[in-house]
Amino acid sequence: MWNGNVQNSRRQEIRSQDFLRLPVSHPEYRYSISRNPYAERLRSLEGFAFGDHDCEALRGRWHSMLGSRELCVEIGCNGGHVLLEWARRNPNQAYIGIDWKFKQIFLAAEKAKKRGLKNTVFLRSRAERISYIFAPQEIHQLKLYFPDPWERPSQRKHRFVTRERLLEIAPLVVSGGTFEIKTDHADYFSWISKAVAQVSSEWRVLERSSDLHQGCLKPNELEIPEVTLFEKIFIRKGLPIFRLLLEKV
Image 1 (cartoon, rainbow, N blue to C red):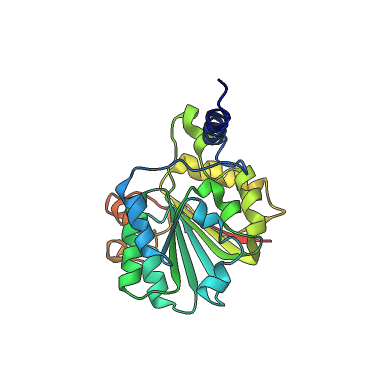
Image 2: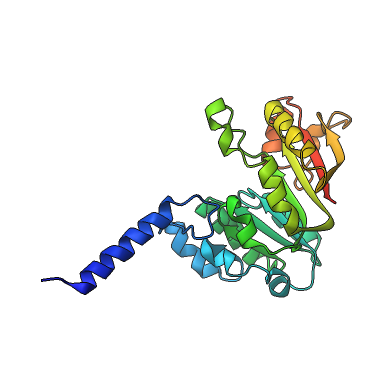
């Protein structure tokens, strides 16, 4: 006997599986259900942390939620070490950190709550979904520090900064807003520079450095938020830091 409920359930299951196979940038992409214990724990930090599609539900409302402040967004914030210090020093500015790792976002948001930093929110989300998380001209400052360089030629398609991504991000940033990028990887820096040169109608280079701390007398003594945790490691190893500061045209 035909069972309509079973059939409908099966169709729904197939549709759900199709969603999971969609590219991350697709409008109908759906996050999969995670068994990570920190996924559930994030719910206890409501107001300081959001996960997956809950991040996108607040698109265009971040300013009203965090107050009438300029918004700074850090992509790949890890445990929020730099962002938390920015928020502490600048209570009249709003900060949002994005990272894919549940535990790091939980720990960052937990610190924000304990410190009473109401100008700070952390998002467990995919950075590739940025245009679904933020509305046009919602961002004033965008930061990307030491993204995965995906070194092998076969992996380079996964690099976050591309010509297409710069064009996608541009409408989200106010005119005169900035996008700061740091990396220790020379090839990725060259890749990024070439991508920026192709989008001069949207972005212009304010500052460029192939050895950011060259003129610093004691770079090993630099502390957060002037440098990141990764940056401190690279400085100790004597590696140059590449930096670009872009301005939205």
